[in-house]
Length: 83
Image (cartoon, rainbow, N blue to C red; front, side, top):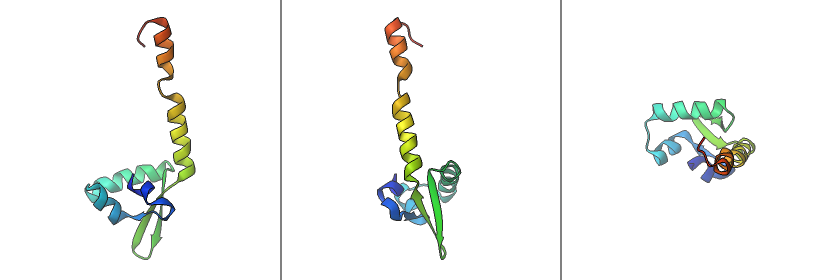
């Protein structure tokens, strides 16, 4: 969430780690997953890695989650049975 709050400028990895209060290895693991899935990008500026949210991908994910949220609940509610 810290990277999104930072806006389009992003944040250096060290600041992300400081704000989240997690070990560097844990942050690295999670960042690599987010980068691999296109939700975060990184840019090297000299010796600093800047993390940025990829807003189109983030918006698409949020839209998908919103569209699919509890969609099967309507079916189970109308039949009177839990899925």
